[in-house]
Length: 81
Image (cartoon, rainbow, N blue to C red):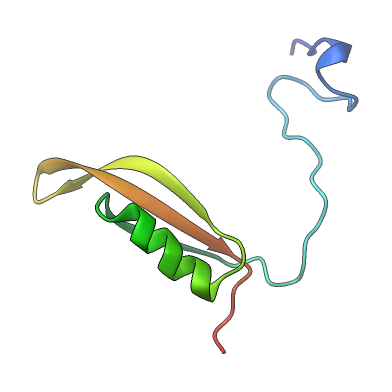
C-alpha cells in the first residue's frame, strides 16, 4: 500500500485506511430523510426549528422509474422527546 505524503496529514495512515475519529456521545443514531428538492429553504427552516445541527445533501433520486432532483437530510444523535 502506498503511503500518503506526510504533509497531507499528521497521522500515519495509508491511502486505504480511515482516519482516527474522536468518539462522540453514546447516541450515534443517524436519521436520514429523503425528499424531492422542492422548497429546500422552507425545509431547512423547519428542521432548524427542531434541531440545532443537521446536514442537507443535494442528490438524485428515482420515483416510479423517473429521475428527480432530491435532497437527503441527516440528523445525528437526535432522540425523541
